[in-house]
Length: 135
Image (cartoon, rainbow, N blue to C red; front, top):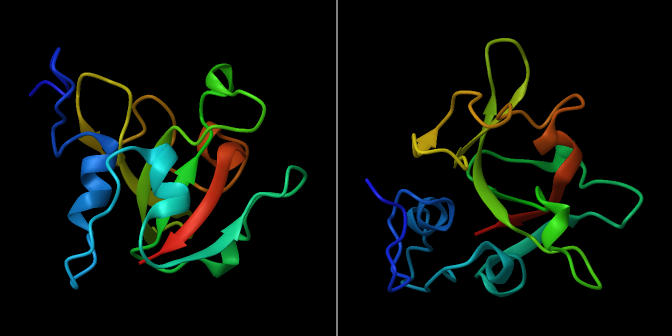
C-alpha cells in the first residue's frame, strides 16, 4: 500500500495514521502530522526532552504516543518532531517496545527494519525520543 500520493493524502498505515487509530474516544481528532501531534493532540504531555535529557522512560504507560526527532537534518531553530509511535510496554526481554510505521516500503512494523523499535539502549529511537503524550 502506498503511504502518500501526489495529492498529499495519507494512508492509515503511515506513522501519524497509526497514532490517529488511537484517537480519543470523545471524538477529538489527532492532528495528521507528527510535528503537530507533539503540541496539539488531545491529552497531556507526560514528559519532553530538555535538550540535555530525554523523556523519562519510567513514566511510559502502554498506549502513550512516543514522538521522535529521528531525522535532525529537518530541524530549524528548534528540533522538529518527525516520527510517532505507540508505546506497547516491555517485551519478554524487559525492553521497552513501540509500534510505528518505519520509513521503509514495508509499512507498519514492530520488527527492527529501519531501526530498532526500542526505547532502551543506544539505538536511533532510544536516542531521539523527544516527547511522550498520553491521550
